[in-house]
Image 1 (cartoon, rainbow, N blue to C red):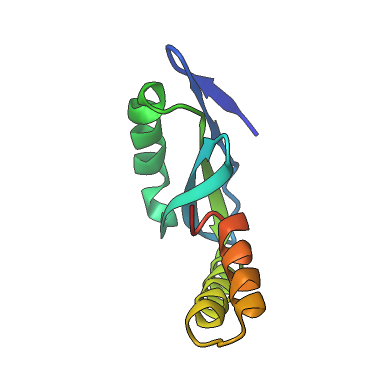
Image 2 (tube, helix red, strand yellow):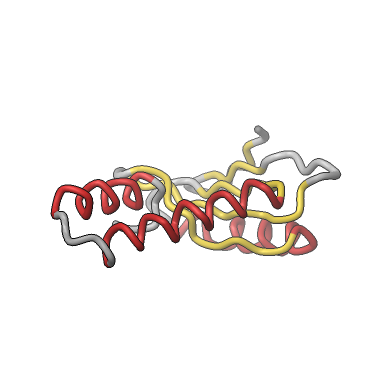
Length: 109
């Protein structure tokens, strides 16, 4: 994955393939990788420009990654199931498990 260096940081930009439909922007922190936004693939250049403008203000690098629609759909399903596990379950162990899943995905801090 190509890296573009800024004054004090860098961004990583994934290669776009014809089947990609979205661009996901991630920020990296000590706690892991967190999804900031998902946009249509035609916003890839705009996402890269934004990342270049913001990178020096961030504590860690920014990753701009083109993804397929199936990947985004699966992510949305997992997030929905995770939130359902937190809010609809009465078993505290299941709630913790759902919370841990969403934390690992970078949805919750």
